[in-house]
Image 1 (cartoon, helix red, strand yellow):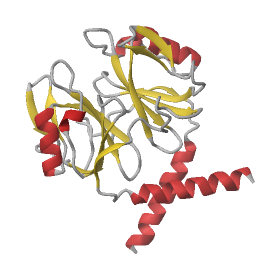
Image 2 (tube, each protein chain N blue to C red):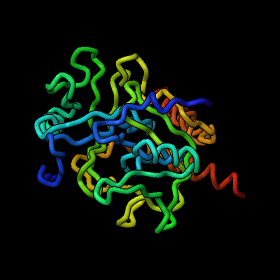
Image 3 (cartoon, chains in turn red, yellow):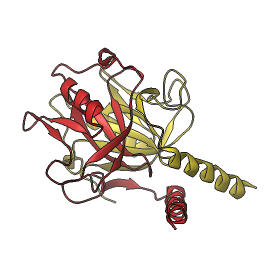
Image 4 (cartoon, chains in turn brown, cyan):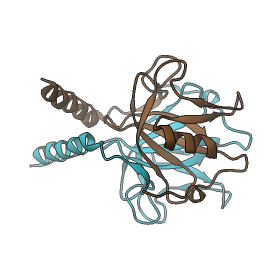
Length: 131
Length: 131
């Protein structure tokens, strides 16, 4: 698949938000920012690279923790200003040790139980495959 | 659940990115920006409100198209600078008519078929519930 990085609209400081999602469970893990170089390194290495705004440098997710994210799918949205990176995570995404950075609930009507059923079925299918 | 909007770190122009995800299928639908007022309106009306940077005004997703997004869960990430809004969508998210704004693939190793199985099982469970 050919890809022209010119399709991506980086903002005035050269960054684009990248949503990272677990491709198997659908869980949204984190959001971080990529510049052109980190996007290219992500495509090249098939692991996620971001640009840290606070440290003003590139970082390869997992380089210190070992929790790499293996990129299986990368897409951009209709107006080219957001990336969606679907990964198989090799460990937790959050620096706190949580699976996902989104663990602070403001509203939770808990009607999403259907997705919990799906996770149950998914685990069941996985186990059947393995055994 | 009490919630202090002070936990959210709005950026220098008063915005925070909000990822919108279908709570039932796990599909990431879009990313848009909220300011404090649109976050409050989202919590109050349980439908998504955003701030349009190009039009410099609040908008209620679905007000013209009818494709409202009913908010079932809203969370913020470990450093409080991104929101995740899990919704039941009443129609397509994208202005192009697509279900999700993320339809431009750069990489797709197509190894996410496991989630396709999950969608199949989900549809099956739904049908059994309805009949």
